[in-house]
Length: 112
Length: 111
Image 1 (cartoon, chains in turn purple, blue):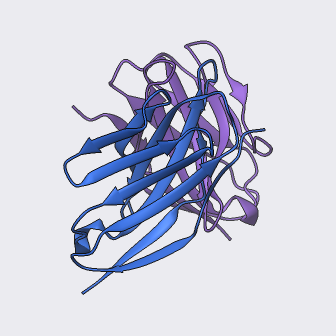
Image 2: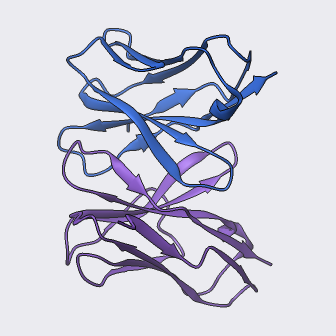
């Protein structure tokens, strides 16, 4: 049982390049989330998808787009990467209200 | 909006107890969670408590909730070097679709 799987684990981009971070879960979660983690700032929500076919902005959505491709997959896209997007990105899934989040192992992104 | 606060650092000696504290502002929080993050890894759920409970114990972990003061604590008994990690407190309100996280407490266990 893989849980929540993120790819890639590491990525280096030049300013202005684009890329898509992939996330897939096999836990039958209805909701999926993208967070970024920066030193001293904890986790900040970028976007989430409460159910298949819906997406909503979180606290820091600027510079990102998401796609909930199906129930299993929720991708995060950077159209034009900026150094301020250097961070560790975590995807998470959640079964229902008040259920805990289950996290992937993260994608470490560096933008030069 | 909701806010969750934690102190950034805590150091303890191996074998001592660790107490990590968290305060939150949302009085309608229904569940409160503790997560552990080891270096280079994702967040792992340690335990959680429903807001109508005062205490929950799970092996070496004890969670205390003071709902009046909106204060949550995680006590780790007999702290080991393997407990060195960042610990995050998080809360959710019944109808909310997301969790709000604190900034994390870096626990260092000294030999």
